[in-house]
Image 1 (cartoon, rainbow, N blue to C red):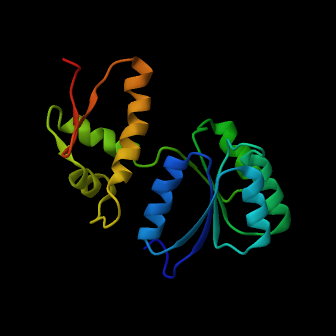
Image 2: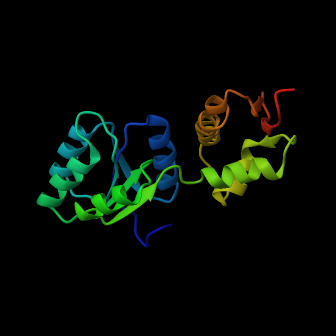
Length: 180
């Protein structure tokens, strides 16, 4: 567990696939997670309830994460961790200056997943093997967390370069190989 006692966590994230992965992991660790899909709803939930920590994306619909962070910080001192794909130094400095306590760029376990595939090219890797090697524990939840991350990885590799390297082996897992 990442804390001695379970935490109540508000996750404000518009990417439902990523939100599901994060929530599953935190719930597996014993924490309680509430989800909000946009900035204005997230701000409303944050201001009306007490949270141990708020995980906040920056690029949100209706009200961006920077504005949400600023408004939450004006109301309370709840720790805020910005989770975002924005990885420029000025983005981090800006977010921290607005009152965020920390800044983490997405994706989180993607490097480990890509490394696992690259170390075993042309070998089919089961979802269970991927969970064990990437997340480092015996995972008792749904194995579709792997599917979500593989889909995200495909977006970064296959779709970006219009070449298919990550292939699904139905009922077994995934394999990294060229299209041939």
